[in-house]
Length: 201
Image (cartoon, rainbow, N blue to C red; front, side, top):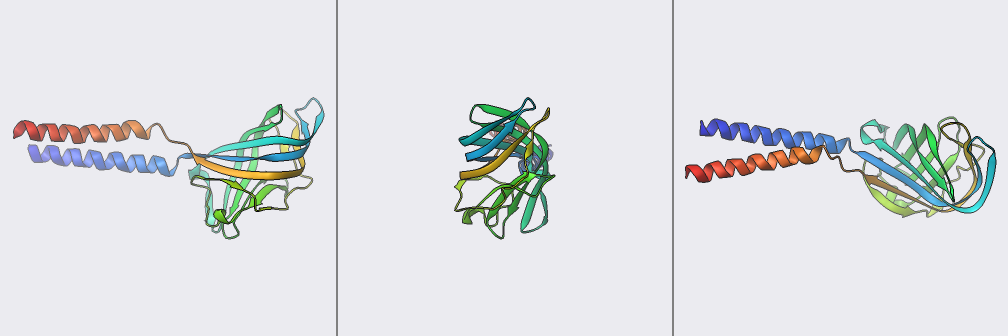
């Protein structure tokens, strides 16, 4: 009976850690691009020009959806997010693509309907596959992806960048709360096993 309980506890603990590990491998990641830029912001009610304004763009996605099939180019397709430019803000349509050119140490993001966007180069991005935390990284070189393309906003309108500087990139893995109770359950099983052993002794 005692050995059967030990086997059950060990199996439950292993299963707990496997599930927790699986959750961690598919944990959400928040990708943040920020810097100073000029361009136009149109929320559907008319374009407002901006120059030398601080901006921040955030995308959050499940790492299980990152396309790892074209190493060293890793892509996250059709990702939405939020954008802030000075006092202006909006929600980006989920038509954006983030590309980590791991072999070149580049990171880019752009609207899926155009070929231009924003990006930066930093040696720390070499080997980066979009699935882990990194940064904040400042640009050692702004990649030449600015052009006529713009980023669409939910509800209509768009944001057009015509120039930028001081671009930085950060990726942060978001903890998965569901894994914590599982881990706690595993530790509780270990405690129960130790308590039973003491009681029997």
